[in-house]
Image (cartoon, rainbow, N blue to C red; front, side, top):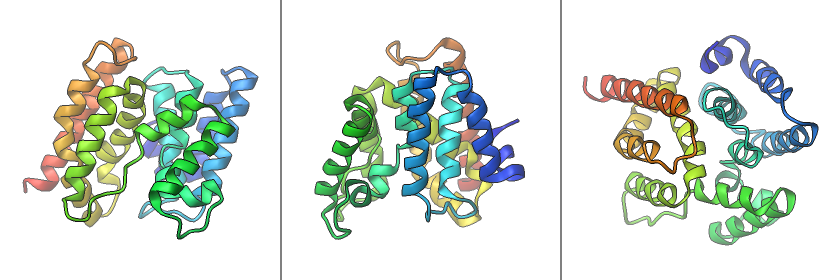
Length: 231
C-alpha cells in the first residue's frame, strides 16, 4: 500500500505500525537505535504540523521509503532520516539551550548532541540535509537549491535521505492544500534535473532497481509540478 495511502486511511498509527513491521527484520541492537531515534523525533516534533497531518508522518514515510523502496538497511542512514529535520526545526530544544540562542550556535550544539546520543556519522548526515541560516537579501529558494546541490555533491549517503524527503514533498504534492502545493512546486521543480544527475552517479550507494524507482518518482513529481505551475 503506498505510504500516502496508509497516511490517508490509517494516519500516524498506521505509519507507526508499518515502521514497526519493517523493524522486525533488523537485529535487536539496530531496533533499539531506531526506536530511540523515533522517540526523539516524536518528542521534538510533537506540536509540529504539515498542514493536514502531524509532522511525524513525514519523517516516518521518509524512513520507511528508504528501507522498503531503496532497500537500505544502514542504521545510521535510517536514524538520520528520522531526525533529518530535528536540527533545522528544533536546534535549541535538542541542544537544551534558550530559545533565543542564535541559529548557528544552536545548530552546532544540536549536532553535538546527535554525535553523543548516536554517533558522528549520524550527526554529519543530518548536517548535510540541514539548511544553513539564509541571507535575507537573497531569494530563499535559490539559496536552498544551492545548499542542496553542494551538500549532496560531497555526501553520497545524504542523497539517499534527501531524495526520500524530496519524493515525499514532490510526489506527495497532491496531498496538501492548493496554496501549499503551488509553493512546493515552485521550490522543488528546479531541483529535479540536479537530483536526476546525482542519483545517476556511480558513487550514489543504491542498487540499480532503487535508482530506477527513484527516477520514475522524479518523473512523476515533474508531471505534478507541471500540472500545478503550467496551467
